[in-house]
Length: 85
Length: 219
Image 1 (cartoon, chains in turn brown, cyan):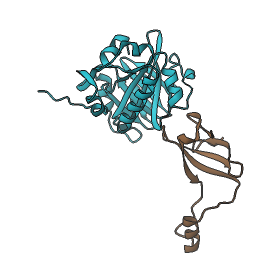
Image 2 (cartoon, helix red, strand yellow):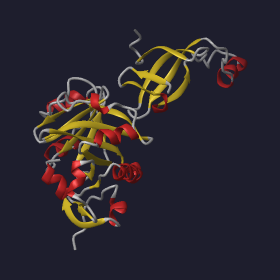
Image 3 (tube, each protein chain N blue to C red):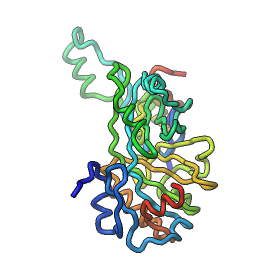
Image 4 (cartoon, rainbow over the protein chains, first blue to last red):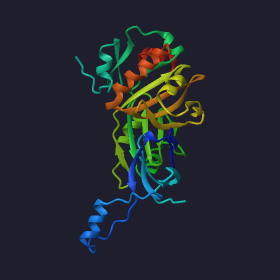
């Protein structure tokens, strides 16, 4: 059973969580080119590595950020938005 | 004929199995089920307590708003306390569920909280169940991933988890010298949760009980 630790609710099976995607910084829509905006909207980085992702503990609707090594599928740490350790 | 003002989310599923009815808190509730046995409370019994009035409030200012009404709130996340006759559950960091044991004084005061930019009302239409009996722990082992032996009624613990795929809030609550487990879920999932838990309880030698037996047991 894969486990994930919510900063508020503790360690639970991954079936209690929903993945919200990698945290990405949007380019400034006022100044970026169409190609840069299209790249942000349509393309994702699939290369394995350590990534920061949004996750939600669905029974409590708690959104948090997890740092995950997508190559080894290991969560390194997790925290609530605005309270990075 | 008076029509009850409130309807349990489990009304339809109870209709075929109820032996007698009673009106509690303006809600038609099952007093006793057909084939119900007092022995269910000695194994695992499931009851419907949806008739209790409840209301939610959340937001950064929710705790202060409740305090302004004289309502005590838990100091830590995922815990419950009693305030007067009401059960006050802190769900996560800034959300609260208030449930009256009888009458509706506390819930009425919370639902009448003035609008504030950091306080949001959360009307609740939960299916509210109670699991009682020594085999309740075994029922949890079969239906959810949290070890309920670590959830203490004395500490006022509650957990937000999923049971048979349904998001639930579970609170361990003392009942005499025993612990019973209150379970709240969204009302639209109530019938599925009730039927599934009843099947598991029947495999364990238990089953549903009505409000008369629950009141006698002090639930």
